[in-house]
Length: 149
Image (cartoon, rainbow, N blue to C red; front, side, top):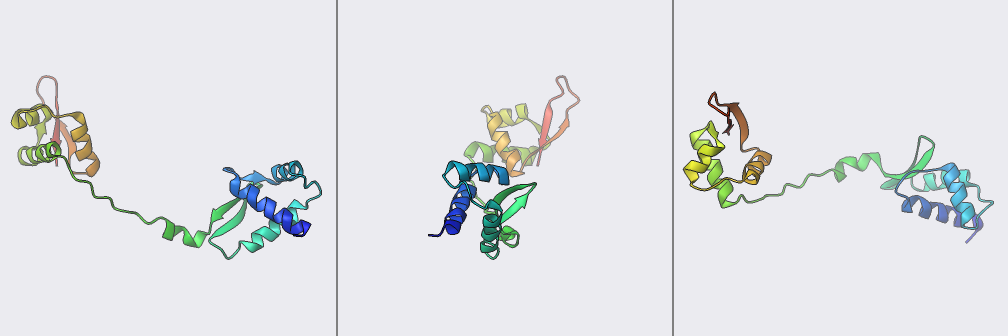
């Protein structure tokens, strides 16, 4: 390999291995540390940028630092959302049924109807799924929070 190709190869490895963007100064120091003191980092970066111009990954300069980033036109293809179906536990289904039928209902009322204690995690699962949400507070002693669908 020629020296220039070796410099480009080393720069490519340095940029891929780095978790953070690297400044031209950092690249010079790392190249010198690897035994490539006379490397023309600027021209090697430009060549590397040209080499990656039409690929899925581009070499970009941001605030004086260099990093590989996904090509902008591929961003939508990479952000596909995967819907994960998750089954509700028996306790969550029972709690949801009680809230739906008796709403607005307090947690104590849910526990009384079900005959067992309702764990906070059960309501959290239903809230995250968007099935249950907090309602108004009752105008009774303790002002308990009600739950609605």
